[in-house]
Structure formats: structure tokens, C-alpha cells
Image (cartoon, rainbow, N blue to C red; front, side, top):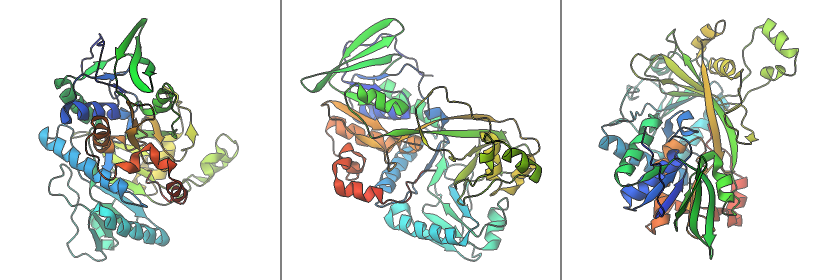
Length: 464
């Protein structure tokens, strides 16, 4: 863990609140890429320990419209991840195994085909269709990313499906294998960025942010508390990168943000039976479903309102990937079946049924998991909050109080977009050249009535 400085300086050029992946990336981009001196990073918790370490650690450049802004910023962010992987000898274990979206419904397959065509046309890469076994399909590489395909593969040929995805249900009518996707160690990425930032003078201060003060409409000071000790840092630049606490930190400036939070959980199981190959990509079931229960189980569940909800239809997007390196048999399973806005509360409330629900849901796509129904393996469940905007596009921009900036609402994709979002943020802070997609991630977008009208008509927000 990075050593924290216990004595805050009296002045700083920039103070960044939040040592999650957003704050660390912001500090790195300001200090390392833009040469800003005297950057202070403030957080009362250890780095990356609130929600950044609760992620699936996956990334993708596959996003819905209605325009290409998300694809472009993700492509840029992935470019930067690959650059950092080369520079660090891939210390954070970046791979490009891809995401596999699968369906058993012909209508849903046609929707996936259309979405794939649109995504490809907006810059996500070439689209390849495999209706028979021609040998053109490129199988998954277990490690690394160099030389791996981009774009996506539409696979409907039964022989190809059985050859490359024999663990999937035989009900699958086709899969969409999106290729510029995969995962990495978010903890290792974050610590690599933090160490490089500290080499350029960034200071990590373990303290609670008490207040952000302004004079004549401009930021002038932040007040901190560490235990019983109060401290003030004079600064003319403040960055709110507080993750789930984005709103409460903005309120210290008198700013109300249009964001909310959802609670998202993940379960980790040991796959002792080897149901899921260790080289598998991230697997996503695109169909809504009802959980498989025995008749006796259904009768018992129906007896109580506390359990009868388990008999109701569940939404799409249960997903899973292998976790760990050589010698590991763990799998991660996720399913946002209860994504209502909630108040952020730490530690997260326990959800005792989550592990079984997500295992049963994933078994629809991977039937071999049903072998665990009678004796569910010991699981570990954790999670965090996806703090997001209505249309699920992040915010990287100035705030109304001069000298204050925002990097947040990174939702469930913070690790994958942190580099691209921090690059935008650093350009705002330093007056550098902004990419032309930066306006898509500014607060001012909500002042555009045409944008708001279009936003209300959007379909998918790209959330998994």
C-alpha cells in the first residue's frame, strides 16, 4: 500500500478529494501527464478500498448510442490502458478475452445483430458474421491483448458454438463475441498510477474533508480533519472525485448534482467441478428468466412474502467470468436484478439470498452450474454503489464555483474509463486541448433542452 503523508501541507496547487480509481487517475494525469506540481490527494480510507476494489475489473468498448461519445472515450481509455500495460510490463494483467452475449430467443438475437451493426458503425470495430464453420473465427486467448481481434463476431453456426463454447446451454441460438473487451487487476492498476503520481510529488493525506471554502466566487481553501486534528490547505483548485459521496462533497460547495446510486453485488465461488473453463471470456445471458426451482421448493417459497419474490420473472444480464491466475478455481457472478436507487450506506447491508439467486440465474446459460444446487459452495459476497447519471454517462468537467471540478458518476465502469475521464478532467483543470467528445460529459449538457428530450427517448444505457 502507498505510504500516506500524515502532515498536510499549508498550500497545494490542486486538492483532489477521493482516493478511489477516479481520484488516483485524476492525480496521476495532473502530475505525471500534465506536470502539475503540489497535487494533494485526500481520503480518510486507504486507497481503492471503498468501491474501486469491489468491481468486476472488466472493460469494454461496446456501448449503445444514440451517438458515438461513449465508444470514442472508451476506445481512448483502452488505448491508454494498453499503453500503461506496455510501460509497466503488464503489471495489472490486462487481457482481451472479450464479452460473450448469448440468447435463446430468435427475436433477441435479431436485436443483438442490429446493435452489433450500429456499434461497429460508430467505431467499436469491424463486425464478422459466422453462419458456418469457415475457420475464420479467432478463438479466445487466455492472457494478453497484443494481436487479438477488435470489433465483434456473430456466431450462429452450431459446430462453432459447440467447439468454442461447449459449456453453454444447447438452447443458445447465437452469441455475439465482442472482442476489445476483457479484464485486469484494478487494484494493481490503481496502485501503479498512484506510485507514478507519488514519484511526481503527489501527496496522499489520510483525512476527512470537512469543508471547501470560497471567496469572491472562487475556491480558496479546504478544511480537513484527521482524528481530533483540524487542518486547512490553501488552494485555488479543488477536484471532487468522491465516488459514492459525490453529492455530499458537491453540497459543500453549494452545488446539487443530478446523480443517484444503485447497490450492486457480486459473488465469488470456487468452481471445484471445473464447470467454467479457466480461459472463458466474460459471459452474459441476454434473456429474462424465471429461476429453476423444484416443485417442493416452489411451494415453500410461495408461502411467504419474504421469499415469494424468488418465483417472479428476473431481468436479463446475469453475467460471470473466471477469477484469479494459475491455481485458482474461482468464478465471479453478478446480476443487477435489484437496481433501484438507494441511499449510500457503508458497510453494505447483507443480502443472504444473492449468492444462490445469481448461481441459479447463471445456470440458465451454463447448465453445468446446476451441479452445485444441492450443496452451494461457500461463497464470498461483496459489492458497492454505482453512482450514476440518468443516462449513465459520467461527469468530467468544471463545477459552477470557479476553481472547482468534478470527476465522477463513473457508475459500474469506473476502472475501464478512469484513464479517458481523467484525461478530460486534466485538460479542464490546466486549460489544455479538450477532445471533441468532452462536451458529452459536462454538466452543461443538462441545460440543452434538445439533449434532455433526446435523453428521455434513449433505450439502453449500456448498464450491465
